[in-house]
Image (cartoon, rainbow, N blue to C red; front, top):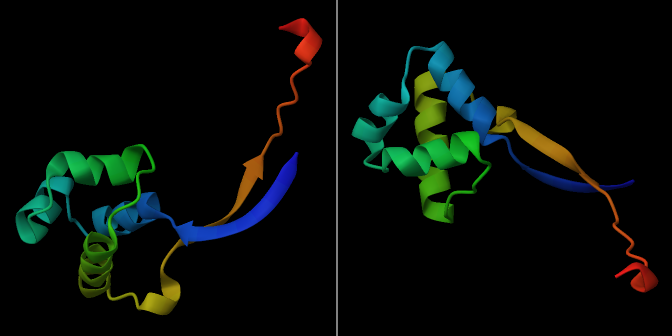
Length: 90
């Protein structure tokens, strides 16, 4: 298994931080006017927001949680498994 560093924001933990201070998906939707389905995609299926939406959401997270940008939750290692197919077994 190959391990490669590819740091990215952990959007699930951003949602968890907001939930911990009493903010629901519906409240985020109402405050930021980002569709609920889009927010759920970021939270549950690992979709990445467009730059502007991500920036808006991080500013919201910062305001609501009191955290600063130095403490944005990140995930940094992706496990990559190489699949080698035997061409004679097609």
